[in-house]
Length: 224
Image (cartoon, rainbow, N blue to C red):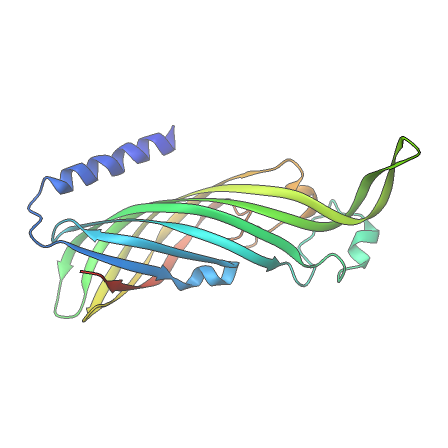
């Protein structure tokens, strides 16, 4: 329900903006470098509808090896699995998502344009965890279970809701954008996720849930 209400609000703002005087349009392509710290990349297109309102939308993509130290276990893991940290490292991450948002510019000076903004993000992470557990095998037509190190498929889905204040500086065609605010992350985990890993120690991790500061920056290039 909350996601539907927010979508309606964003759509209403956009329709209202299009109806305004839009004699100063522009389009930029942007990347958000901080996503590299969680094995991802985020890029979006930002469109200047009026002198006051911008809208943007984009995508996220994640891939790589995570938990290389093998220390993201939970209390539910057995003693034997805690002993062999190196073999339990190298979880594999794949994921994707989308983002959309709106900015309202309320102040302009000689160097910066200041705005209030809000955005939504969605991510789905598929993580192949290396962990000790009981795995089935078939011998002479019968199914047995063996306790060993193996690959376990888990997944996480996250919705993020953010509000912020920020500033934009344009240098010829280069656009630099920074912001700070607060956000809330809603997370849905596969049933076995918490049994094997935490991945929730800071905002942006694959199983984080709750409120957290929302800050960052992005670099863009004006296409026209």
